[in-house]
Length: 203
Image 1 (cartoon, one colour):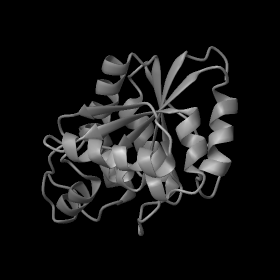
Image 2: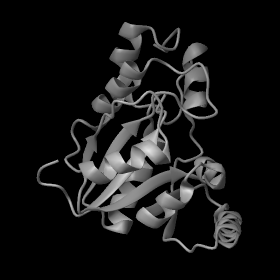
Image 3: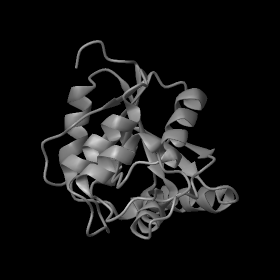
């Protein structure tokens, strides 16, 4: 990738749909961790989730949400599933010479220790973990337990971020029942309506 930024954030997720919490966390990460740019990466088949909307719909919603933000970008990897073993080398090749920072929600971070080949990720990247208010001490203890179990110390920044109590599942449920959900992005309204992604849409 030409003209690569020096400090790059990678924000992988389901984004079904992307919402204000995702964007607020990304902005907080850019400002606090001095990232040059964040690239969103939509997971084709997310772990522990079923019944997600088609990949092309989720990718298009991300494009719509970030289109006016110069320090946000999006990457698409031709993989049926993401894994440390296969995905990390592609990211390192794509952003050769850059310092990689992986953005994770605390729910994902809690399962990090169960990922295959996670040591490669720990040794190659930094972590920025978005936290809900009041969860920082619990997550620090979880980090300590991972480091102790793995015998590795790794660079992790915890960010308590507004709107992280918002969830895509709550937004989907509200739209299904013709309600106006908190944290929903108005820029997605027409696309969701035209493609009938969540059954109904509030007037």
